Length: 135
Image (tube, rainbow, N blue to C red; front, side):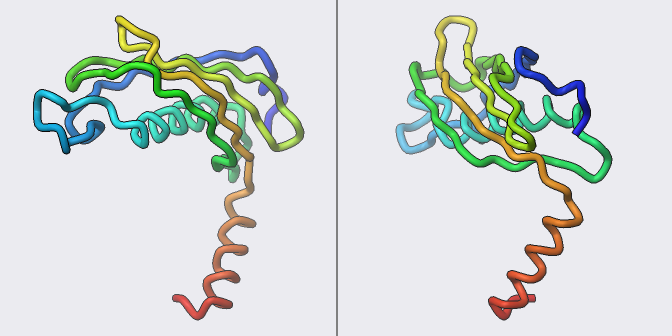
């Protein structure tokens, strides 16, 4: 991990809410941004934010998510995620975030990511797969 990663850094990412990001069980008129997709978009925003601050061979994985889905966002609107690094504790990075759809704050919360060495993670997973009898 590079020394450039520090508390107080901020970033943004905007996504368009297409049908794949929406619930479908209430018909086209009821298609709104699904909470699981908000979580995924927020996690990817934080991961992409971290990448320039990581050394070659490193990546990050999610450890914790706390999210409030505050407002319905219809299909075809855009949502902007604003993330801020709250703390860096060795390899553990804590973010706060908000999500805004241009009319309402539609989400907010915290997210913790852990910086991993990809080769070590791959070896641990291979060992676990082998112990479980998987290929």
